[in-house]
Length: 455
Image (tube, rainbow, N blue to C red; front, top):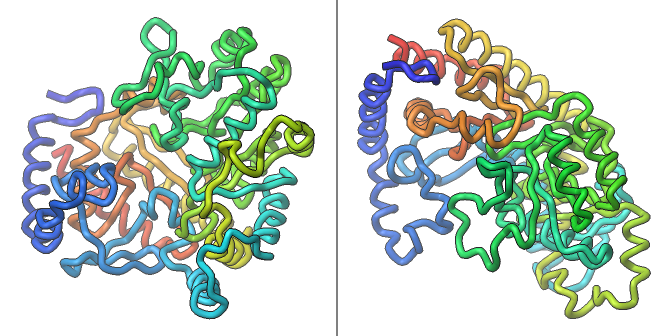
């Protein structure tokens, strides 16, 4: 029986079982390490690491550029790149040198004092994204949380609006989706919500301006928190006029706009905000800007910064709920300065996007050659193939197009032949070190998988 994904399910299960067996046979040290880790909750440092297509995770030993070697000695082309956290490549030399100089040379991992590196990073982020004032966190999740608190305070409004099946880390307010009746409800799998999410949040489908206006018309939304393109549910690109419509509606209803560029930074050196000439009130980002060292940041427009700093009732120094002892630490700041000034440069993005375009073009050719009803989406240096054609236009459609069984087979097949994709979806990211030869290697293995799958 062939399903909407265009594959024979019985053959798929047979091939998947074979690939999982090969995976386990070739990785005895990873399997043993996983079994020994019985003092870790879920046997892994963080429970999401159990998202693996083969029953246990690959344990890595070393990494450099876009290459990883596991504890069993297998080498991999890495198109996952820490799901954007290592977009600059693993351990880029300028970042390693800057961190080593800070720790071993100058000293001081945590001092609760500013460094000149922080001001340089703020200036560079301002140049790239167009927002003049910046503050730092350790993750984009925290940057989003703190931005939400500031905007609730300055507006006096209680609710945040997000897009259905968005991704903003573990922000409580973002775990809401559009239900079958068109109303918001808690996203499946939401763990230990402090309150019912509909009390804190409103939700609208991506690419749906009418739905957005319907929710904003309640005039209780402090901010729209959104990615300029959905990413974690699979790439969903904005339709012509949609982002301009969002900006117009938020202004009309007195609501601030936050662009979360944590993943959409792949669109270019200034993310989608610069690439598409957007004008958010706040921009949040994390992961990639420090070359793999933990960081988050949020930028504020001049008007918003003035409105916040002009409020004598807001405690931004002591107990206001915004900040953390390790935020803006010297190591993160040194790493971010080196990464932005020397690694993820305009020239690097030109190369990364060109390589991604070659990746996307080759993928489409292979998929079309097998007449599969799939599609390919590109967001700058990021490419994803979807088990639907045309590509989904919102998060709910994207979630409905998922095929976990098929996705897992492709991931294990690729991993067994030395190619890694992002474990949460079919995303491939290009680093400055990724070459067209690497792309051709992926495509050769991918074509072999489809050949077997459609036999």
